[in-house]
Length: 227
Image (cartoon, rainbow, N blue to C red):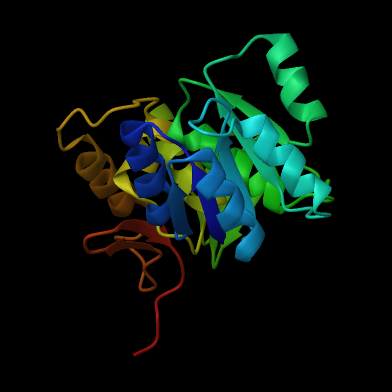
């Protein structure tokens, strides 16, 4: 997805840009409100992320101008102003969603996915399958080829996240935030250890390997790619 990020804080912008690019998005960044508005009106984007407090032109003014140009692009507002009145003001200006700072990368990505699915409304899945591997979120059971595989709580949570996003390469940042609730990298091999244990349980005794390492990127649940 091509995303326009308008954020003047370089640390926040770097964090967001890196996270979005790791998730496969194409990001263009503007630090100034007026430049951001001109970029939004001159170039095609699929989604905008707009900080509320910006130099030269504030975020809400940008949104009103974009909507005034009959542009219905999904817009997510970022702001340190998280009070109800501030959120309501942002939505009334034309934003589709409002995320208060500080925030987790996982929540940002989830909100972006939700905006991309606007008009959906599919029922939340409780069971995921890949080849002969099955995970049931209601019974907390994992089976492969019909055989029940015992799972510790963290292993089950890791497998659930991988299965929910099968076919998508998941980075260390995404796994740490969604499986371990870490919003920083503890610089340990915790992910490698759990991936190894999980792979031993779901792949070791089977010819078809489903959990794959993508060097320099992360991990993915998928069928093997034919050579």
